[in-house]
Every structure is written in structure tokens, then in C-alpha cells.
Image 1 (cartoon, rainbow, N blue to C red):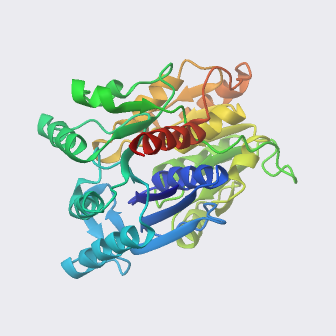
Image 2: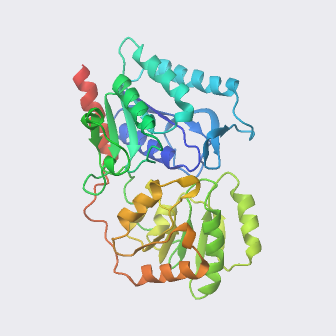
Image 3: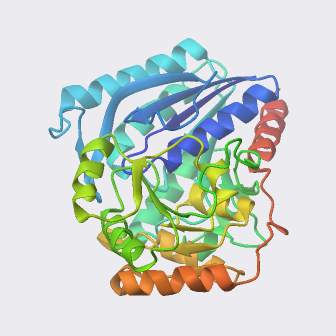
Amino acid sequence: MKVLIAVTHLLGTGHLSRALTLARAFTAAGHQAQVASGGFPAPQLNADRIDLVQLPPLRSDGVDFTRLLAQDGTLADDPCLSRRRDTLCRTLQVLQPDVLITELYPFGRRSLRKEFLALLEAAHAMPQRPVILSSVRDILAPPSKPEKAEKADAVIAKFYDAVLVHSDPAATTLDASWPVSDMLAAKLRYTGYVAPPAAGPHPQQAGAGEVLVSAGGGSVGTPLFETALEAAKLMPETPWRLLVGGSDAAARIEAFAKAGSPALLEPARKDFRQMLSHAAASVSMCGYNTALDLLQAGTPAVLVPFDAGNETEQGLRAASLAPLDGIQVVKTADLSPAMLCTAVNSALRASRRVAGGFRFDGAARSVEIAAELAGERG
């Protein structure tokens, strides 16, 4: 079975990370998987042995997802967008996949709807059209207007066979963040959480005893990092380490270093998940992949959900995790060095959390669902 996964991450790297995890699961099951990525390269992610097709990359203008910036920082123009559409559709024609998966669309990425619709139209025009699946995380950004949900429903009804919801329904169902119509409900397939196997211990025990501060792989989290730099001064007996993401990580680290904090500053690392096994505590936002990393590792955690630009997804996820042992949630509006230290100490005093009761086999289950649907088509 041949599988094409189309994904564009515009701010952080969570969407691409999930797509790569799915691709590895398809490959491990003996299928041929290809990922067409339309965001900026993310070298901190593990793309080893992944067949990755890079489209002309785009990123959002901060949290304004309607303004798309090209590699040179200028507003993406029609020729750039045309090149992306052409590359995406050519990739489809060359691979001739049995399964096509679009990450997030049509529940998001509306600013890229022309290229996604071109891909879907091209897929439906194939002599043997592929099974078409949408891939979404546990919690979506709720639609700001009812029409947005209605338009997503129309695209699902016209083009899609099913929607893979990467959540354990015992914890979160899609209707917690998105209006689910009867039509959509019939197409939902809950897979469990999509996560790589638990990382286990770090061979050098990197991060042991530290407060590990992270904000994902994108150029976000500056207020969190600036607060953590000052909080580290208030806890001199505890080592703090800040892992700074983004293509501009070196410049951001140079700027942060001027704070004169005892915290160690370095770029985001590929062994972050292993470091969590040894960290005294984690301080982070609450993106999908980070939340799963914390659940798997059992690390005491302070969550500061990303809420710039009226974003609500991470706040909803953090609220669902707050009842668990060793998890503290601090709103951005309440964030201060003293508050962060209080939350860290509270997380450290709590009972150790175990990662029981949740399904983390969402990637393997996604492969099974895709194979079942492809088999039904003959």
C-alpha cells in the first residue's frame, strides 16, 4: 500500500512531527509512505529514513495564519503558491497512492485551501482514487463562526472517506472543541494518541535534576523563556535549562543571555524526550506532542498554554490534564517569576504520575484503519 501524507506546519512543528510518526508507522508495517511538507524544515525532528518531499516552505506571520510568509520573509505571492500546488499535485501523480492523508485540513489551514482542494480534486480524478483521510489531533481550534464548521463539513462530505481523530475517547472527544454533525460523526475514527514509543532514559542522563523549559520547535515562547530566566535566579539550588526552538534559535539565545540568568541556554534538542525521563520538572506550553511526551515520561510539569491571538486549543488540553498528579497550569496572564517558582515547587511535591489508562498506539491503529478502508475498496 502506498500512502501520501500532506502537511504544512506554520508556527510550531507539532503537525509535522505527527505526520512523520504516522509515516514511520506505515513504513514499519511494510507500506510505502511519503510526506509532502509545506512548512519550514525542522532539523530537530527525526526524519531519518522518511521519504520527505519539501514544498516551497511557508510560515505564518506570528499567530496571524491568514498572512503567509515565504522563505525570504516576504508575503507569499501567487507564483509561490502556484509552485506549491504544482509540486503537491505532481507528487500525487508520481506516487499514485492508495491512501491520501491531509493533516488538519479541512478543519484548519483554510488559508491553504486552494492547494488542498487542488490535491483533493486531482486525487478524485485518478483512475483508481485513493482512500482519503483527514488527520486531526485531540483538540482543535474551535471555529470562530458556524459557517467555518459548515464549510469543513461540506468538504468532508464531498471528498473524504473518514477522519482520523488522534485521541483516546476516554479522555477527549472531538465535540469538546468542534461541532460534530451527524454526517461528521459517522466518519470519525478514534485512533488513540499518536506518539512514538516512550523514549526511556537518556544514555548520558542529560537533564538529570533540572527544570527543563521548552516551547516546541518553533519561534514561540519568548514570554515563557524570559520568565523562566528570572525564575531560575529565585531557585539557585536547582539547575534550569532552556531549550529554544525556531530557525532563529541562535539569535534568540544570544538575546536571552543578556538577562544574566544562571539557566543554561541551548537550541531545541532531538533527545528532549529522553531528557524528560531524568528532569526534576518540565515547564512548557501544552501542544499535542509535548503533552504526550509528558504523559509518557511521567515528569512533574508546569503547563503554560499558548493563548496568543485568541488561541484556545492548548488551554482546553491543559484543563483536561490539570487533575492529574504533578501537573500545574499557569495562565499566561498570571505568569511571573514568583508564580512560576511556586508552580514548579508544587509540581515537585506532588505524587509521581504514571502513564496508565491512555492509549498511545494511535499511529499503529491509523495504519490498521487505512488498510481496512483501502481493502474494502478492493
